[in-house]
Image (cartoon, rainbow, N blue to C red; front, side, top):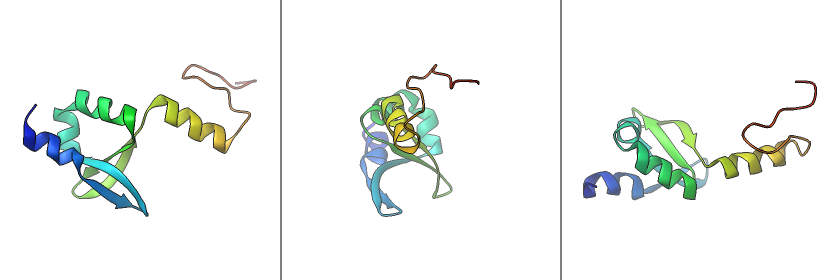
Length: 84
């Protein structure tokens, strides 16, 4: 993989006081596999025109955050709530 591309995601930037890896939407598109591999290890902020627009994170981290928000929330990507 091109060294310039890899170095574009290695830098960390503070978003609301939290340091995260970041990359442009163009780099995310061109290096989708790299984005997935990186996001499995830690969240990655995707930017458009220099502004953070989305964060990509692992399923495990997403489920952990959902559990913090609502402990009654079923776990797993295919889990459904009672009555849903």
